[in-house]
Length: 249
Image (cartoon, rainbow, N blue to C red; front, side):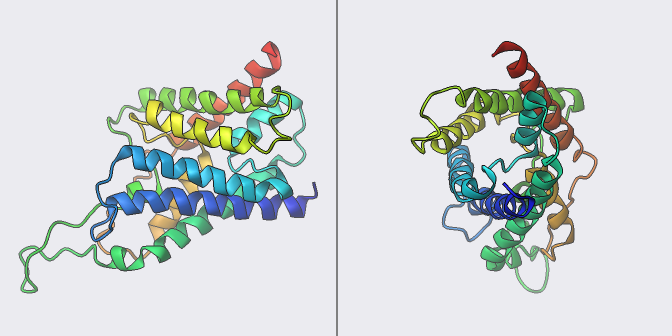
């Protein structure tokens, strides 16, 4: 795979991933959305379908990593580091593009996120915080516990992905991406409760940057004090998964 193919594939695939993932969070979160308050199960499946669409799209060009933790785990296992930067750059750019596309899709709902309570314009509900649409927020803020959660959840993603490669015929049958998508749904349902399961550094960092600069009314904080955890945790988890796979398989 050429550097150009890898960059284009990872950019497009990650943009699709974030469009679907942030999109389902927007659908469940924002007022005046038909899917408002439809719940965590919907979010988990929305992210899983985002992986399905993004990875299948990117696979012919780049293999469809869509996640620096996956790229890092593969590099630790194989010792091949030369193209890691291309993968990560494409993933980061794609994550930001996907976040902007989500904003444009729900533009009217974001614009309706305006505080009117107690003004001469009338009354309305309080504005909805929007950071959770773009980035992760821990349910209980405990840096050590949050970091450990992200590490464990990412090992739970990357180690099975590496092991799936040992299953004869899984890749050739075209079902590998489907299995990984279901894995992501499972992680969301089982391990997503404490932190919102970033398990992907650019999935959190890119959209958080976009949230910082988007002109969303009453958008609230971008919470940069927490932002290092969903970056460092998945990177540690990805590296550990690659090391364990290399030693054990």
